[in-house]
Image (cartoon, rainbow, N blue to C red; front, side, top):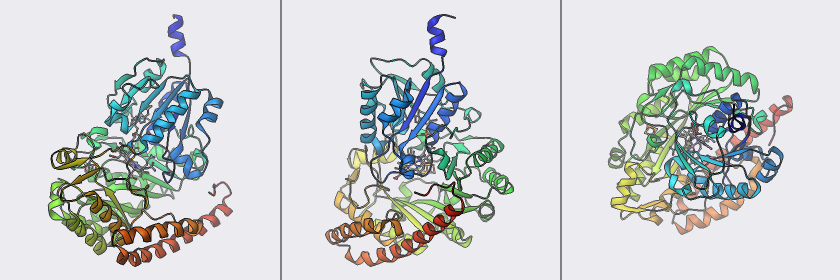
Length: 489
Ligand code: B12
Ligand code: SF4
């Protein structure tokens, strides 16, 4: 064995980082991609640490990256990049490159969609596009400083090549309450606004269900604070019978956790499935509606009908499940007037929570092409409607002659005020001060956008949510007193 070869094969210390926007962005889940890639590297004998600031923020424990690097002394640093965290990611890369000489690898959805952002970046040695399971071990093994970043187009793994996550290597994992798993990757549909085909592909890669159940079982045994299991597939019900099989297997294990599914298509739900979902501990279902205006809806090419959505929403309510509804404001063909149809539908179907996203023209989507021809496209970097900005608006990333910037902002504000929006959810007993100051900002904005009449509707939802959050908070406090292992934030 020559020296170079043996140096390459020595175990290394690998640090994975998920930067997070400064405020408002947190999640109670540990980044799945990093815990998968970390798992592969741990099995290869490397020492791996994950610092997921989006997760750590939820624990209110955010050690500085400098202190982490000084303690861990990584040989390789891998950073995941999201478009909505773009500036925070750039700042993080600056701080990392100032305090460490380790080669830096970047990957994640933003890198897959916008690799050009890093092509001339002297801080970066490797740019990895796509799912990195098949190339991470070799990339880390050979990692060295590069004058110009090397671009690696990672081939997507087959389902059996997707490993089990290793959550133990993530800081704060002992407090983990939500376990995510993908039963499949990819989605065969072609909704006009969706970039999943560029990220996970149109071909569905279905994982072995028994393997998934076994992984869930192991994780629940290892992390006793887990209270919910989230299925984060792009299209979990692409094969209804298979999904029902999963629910049966999950229910038979009597895990004593709740089951959550981030997104479901209305046309792929039926009574038997909901019955099984409830027996498996399912509590909520969020439907993608996008727009309730027939013309706008037609242009989304969802391959389902508005009628499917109405029927599915009623069925979800019939099973006493929480109903979520996800809308996109300002899609091709949309106008302020047409947007009112979406608000009307949300009021009719009374979801327990609604998401109102601004139309975002991801490269490679039909929406992007439409706005190139029929409107204007702004910068997507740092843009996010849902969690930040609360009442501080970023410019909508697209406009058209029929639906201009100010109208889009008004539409967003109106929808969030008049429906049971999740945007304003973090009140509860812990945050009364925050609520009062936000309310003052809200009143000013409502006045500016001539929406004062919508404020009482919003107050109705807020009082309900306040009571619900306070009740949950008190219940959690009681639980944590009887189980001191739980972290109380
Ligand atoms: C589950 C999920 C969530 C969950 C949990 C997110 C989390 N922290 O884990 C929740 C519901 C909280 C969520 C919220 C949001 N999400 Co989300 N979410 C997803 C979803 C559906 C699955 C994520 C996942 O686990 N993928 C599977 C794993 C394996 O992929 P991965 O983590 O990206 O990692 C792989 C590769 O990207 C790559 N890789 C990743 N990082 C790195 C780093 C290196 C160094 C290397 C080499 C490789 C590499 O290799 C990994 C293994 O294959 C994706 C869609 C998708 N298909 O990915 C959207 C997605 C990630 N979300 C997205 C968005 C926009 C959001 C929100 C901003 C929505 C909003 N408007 O608020 C919020 C922000 C959340 C926050 N607080 O930070 C976008 C991101 C787009 C972008 N360009 O950045 C996606 C891609 C959806 C989409 N189609 O646009 N999300
Ligand atoms: S069904 Fe969902 S994941 Fe599939 S293309 Fe449509 S929006 Fe994207």
